[in-house]
Length: 554
Image 1 (cartoon, one colour):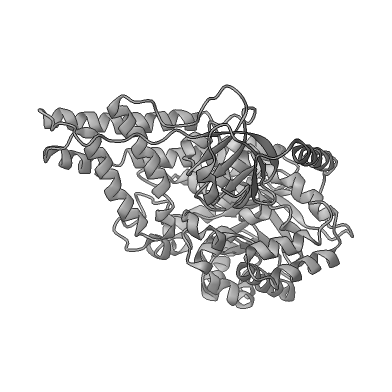
Image 2 (cartoon, rainbow, N blue to C red):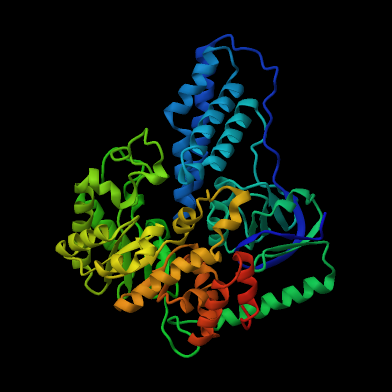
């Protein structure tokens, strides 16, 4: 095995320590006898699935933000009646509950894997649900995080959300996974915990318990058996970086004073207080799906208005960009989503849901406007997800303005919108690039496909070219263009995005200090030079290396 392993760094930082691997998934024995009472065995299978869901819901109640939303989505999958029905059918045919449940999950897995990138993203989550249900049925220990009794570097094939949210940063030094991608749940949750993390590192399969490693998530490398001098130098660099970040505060700007708004992403009430306390200039992405999910009918206008007003009040004196309902694909709604849609990721989702249910968008815009009228000190903007053509942007902006909202823009997540950005922006007030979706659609790559993870690297020059063309259109028209995908929190990439013409960056609060410091160290001319170097590189890895050679200390 090579001493130096490479992957994709998804949460910055450097750490060194011994490896501890996640326990293997439970095996279903081949010789389980047929049940004597099929009905009782089916009840046992359903009880196991319900037990898994209840455990996930308990964990969700103890965390906030995206972590809670991910766990709640997993619990919904475990409670899906179709899953229990599939298991019951196999039990009726003579299978024992563990065998039947594993087979039911395998069938779900095949269906989701073929349903496009957004639904295929859930495949890794299904594997975790299967393992937990099977462990319950077999009376085996629940698969999960090891406890070696000392701080360790966690290594796994992949990590389930239910495990990641329980990690203790005082014990887990860093995360390395063989699979996953830069926008996977592991990446999102590791960043929220402030843990260095590397995904899509196939060489990690050969790392054994106890071997010492140095994880450099900034460089995307794992060094096996590093000597003490290498570790000491890396540790000193981390300490210096932390000191530098601690000194950075206030509005974002380049070294020569060009302003770059630094904003936060939020998704619900549980994370509101922490996000509002962050040193940010407002909210660049307020996801509103949390109000609509897991309910049989839409929230009332009064319920919506109250939820929006709480966020606006928390960010009084600052800007809040509200994204209208982004339903469909991996966020199905009982009262909107068509269950047998052939390819949800390419179907009726985001703004397109208004074609079938125009009353949802109209009601949401009215509620946002009413909440904004109650909180006049907050600068409220609104934007639509999944806009593809100029007519959609124009019609949405007209409807938002008519509802009383002064600033209305669009998410650029579809390559067509980026390629025709000038026409799209001509009909609205601003644009925000959702780099996670834009990368998926640009490279036709499932973000959970580990072997394709390099295509989802936000450093890919093809993706950066779409960012550049969108930002250039905004500059010509005098309209702001921001980034609110995971790329915005990459401190090395931030000056590149600004050099491409981006005017704001919105991210998880944990990324603010590093991005602020990186921008403060480079002039606008230097940012443009870094952007040019990235655009002319062969691929994402080469772009990152070229820019690292131009930067001072990021």
